[in-house]
Structures are given as structure tokens and as C-alpha cells.
Length: 192
Figure 1 (cartoon, one colour):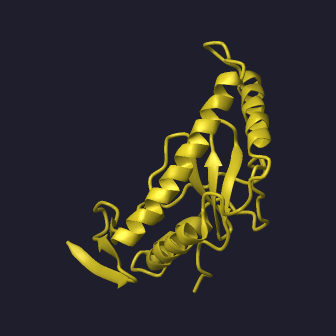
Figure 2 (cartoon, rainbow, N blue to C red; figure 1 turned 45 degrees about the vertical axis):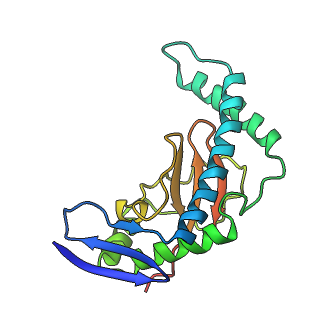
């Protein structure tokens, strides 16, 4: 059963009844081109990341936490070298940032917005300090789960990348290297 159709700037997000699948996103041709550009930038990063992973020492079949962390550090160091000039907006370009902010705002302020905000508040407290691009994701900052309704309006990512919220910022996090690949500042609107 459908509850709401929110239309803004050509984007349609259909919110389904509770327990139903996540909202569907219909893109305009212009939005599809923006998402394609984003996917191409992700693919370029993935190529660099796979090259760095091949050069890292391969842990034994039953690796210890120490071996995994050592391998992760080697991958991160190699990625930092090849992305030495990486900065905010390399992947979340201005047009991608605007599109994602619009999509997130529609969901954040939509019928499930209160539940999404409650979910984020009930998670572990998030740091509000910005995380720099190419930095390691700090151990002191929890990897809070991203609510499914927010994930549903974001372009899908390869398995070794994930979206995470730190305060109101959306970060692109690389699992094999534990690096912050890019940051979308103020991705979420202020809480109403």
C-alpha cells in the first residue's frame, strides 16, 4: 500500500507502507547522467584500491587481527600515496552532492523521517568533527549503521565501499583500507 509520493525537482521517491520494501527512486535523464559520473569516479577509485590490495601482504588462511590490520595499513599507505592530492568533492562532485542532498532531505523530512532521526540518535553517539579525506576512519568513532531508507535513495556501492554518517556528514568509507575516500559535508538537513 502506497502512502506518499514526494516529487521535487524531477525526482520521485515513493514511500511504501511500514514493512514494505524501501522507497523506489525514479531518476530524470539529467540525474541519471550525474549518477553515472559518480559511478565512473567510484570505478576509478576501485581500480586504484585493487592495485593497492594486490601489493599488500596476503594474510594466511586464518589471519590474526594483527595480520589483517597490518595488511589494511599497507593498502591505506599505498592509496594515500596515489591519492596524495585527494580532497573533498573528488567523488562527491558538486552536482552529485546537490543530488544526494536533495534525495536525503526528501527522505529525512518525509513520513519516515522521525523514525530515521530516532534510529540515528539511538545508535552510538557520533562525532561531529569532520573527518579528512584520505584519513583512517578513527577507532573512537563508531561505524553506525546507515538506515535502510537513507541507503535506498543513494546510488549503490561496490561491496568494499560503504556510506557512513558522521554527524550530518556523509562519508564514503573503504573497508579494505579503512580510509575516508570522500566526504559530503552537511548531507543531512538539520534536525527539525
